[in-house]
Image 1 (tube, one colour):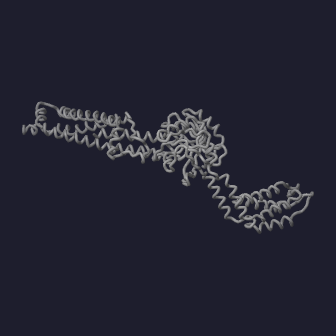
Image 2 (cartoon, helix red, strand yellow; image 1 turned 60 degrees about the horizontal axis):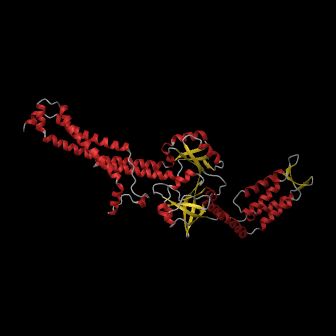
Image 3 (cartoon, one colour; image 1 turned 135 degrees about the horizontal axis):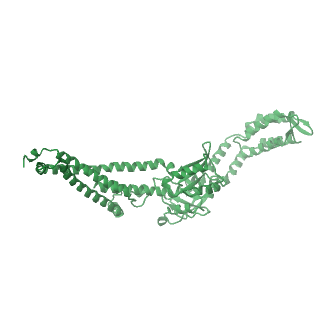
Length: 503
């Protein structure tokens, strides 16, 4: 019975692991390439050239653009932060992998988003928002919301003409008082004008309203249009430059805070407009795998993240995702130290180790069932040796060696172990083969051992690993042999006279 349980549980655990990994590898890259500079991730604008280079590496099936970010999903006045992933819809392999995850029988639909305003959403997201194929959703870019937050903070600050009133008043006086004329051009001391330029530059690069920045840019351009004299002591400006600078300062003085704040926020409207997308498909998910809530075309993702043709990373699919380390080494060697190459195992190492640890603990715990069975066989052999002590005494009196006595009872225990192992493995494989009817029967009586709401998997997955089955069968047989060997060895050491005393 222990062998049956061990074979069934290991097959179910292996099937569960393979099912989860297949879903993970269905929409996740086997290797993710990122361009790093000083520990910070950089955007990749020449990704088509890098893609062509990566496609030629041995073991690489294909490479494609990768882009992900967080966004706000809006549906029927409900708002929720979700992760979206932008994929290259022209990549056939990637679209086929996503197509396999589409729940066509349940919801219909497809993974074909084309280049239009379409999206594929996760089943968990669809259930949360009550979405079906054909519905519309709105995605608000998190980057745009950050820009809105920054703009809102700027509106809390006073106008620069008010915040730096003394400085601008002093500039007015100095421009008139320190100006001289040389070669029909307006001349100023070089150090004075350089200090003035630097002070205005500090204000310009700070957090100020865009209309104020435009005025400061105009002033700085006026200063940049001049040049030094031959002696290098004076800076010469075009005639009328001082008057132009004073006019720009007058524009700053005439600005009204409410008007400029309104202009700043209205200017953000186009950037912050949400993208309306049509749901064309719903893909299956699992509670055990981190997955995006929404898939969108690459162009849509770039617009949501305010990128102009750039991507964050390149996804790479390899021929054998379970032996990805060799391809990682080749990519690092070809691309150089500035590139980071993380495999799906690296990114999900905690989860992979957890699954492996669960299987090992299950193996360890269920092995005790087989061990108990071996002790039962030991007890049976002990009982037989007690019942057959006269026969043992006769055998030893007739010249039987201890080895022959041990061999008799060990052979008897081995027969029991062999038959038990073969029967246990056979019944275990039979249960695995007909697991679905058994599972439905258990659910019919209210005992659901694998709830879909938690695991997100239909039915009871299973995968028979021949190597594991052989290990279980051989291990059970060896335990039974050892269990029979112990009482047989003790029996072989008995005194034949004492065995025959009650004969």
